[in-house]
Length: 333
Image 1 (spheres, rainbow, N blue to C red):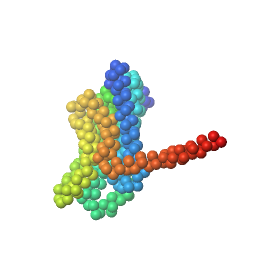
Image 2: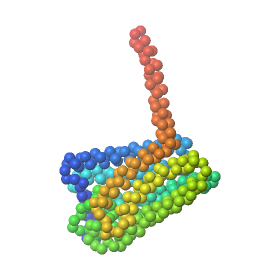
Image 3: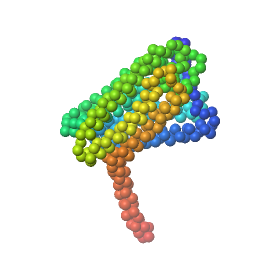
Image 4: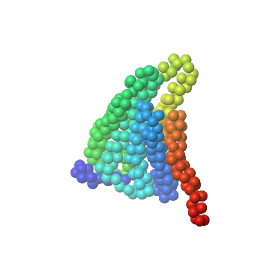
């Protein structure tokens, strides 16, 4: 069996959401709309931050990086899930293909969690040390923090993926999930997986628990600073700066904690699949909406971008209308 693993002879298939073609079609349409919403929303956020010079600040630099990560995260999961829904469980995926999806899932998901912690630190500096903000949050530091989140995601993804891909798989190879999630794949191994479960728990703690504690520490200092403010307007502005980020943090970390930071004996495949739908399909759609609706600067920048696009089209329409009478006069002559 070890030889089969190395040659890629092992194949998996996903447990279908439904064997009823009508129900499967509805689920496919729903997931496709969520995926398209994620693509449109995150691409829009990226274009807004890229095009509008007023948003060229560290806070929106991290928002741009988060949108790029969400794009990769969604694209890693959604196309294979949609193909699996259409095939209703008949589509096969090889062990190397499953390992590649796991690797990018941990890489992008772990980087996402660490980047959210970097965004919390940015808000801490902006509220608690506003006079030194430009000095502390330099572009060099922002670049290092973003690359560091990717580097940490890579270091977390590689060893766990290698460990799982070297497990022997035999017999029933149906993954009770819609993608190659680590707990669901490890349940199919015909070997002792206690070391792998411990590694998964340790990596989950490094990717989820530690950044979450840093976020809590940052917001503890932020709340202390806000409580000392005399201006009600200053308090409202500080809360509005943090509210969108807090909503994204609670959505992301809440689901990850319930799946990966719980004892393996209490893992439920049905519950794991339902929670995974939230953070793989709903979260990438909700994040751009949260940052757009709750942030006036992003909303104003989006309006300016739309107005600029309409202005580029309007002169062409104006010139066309202006030339219509001359064209008609030439035709009459």
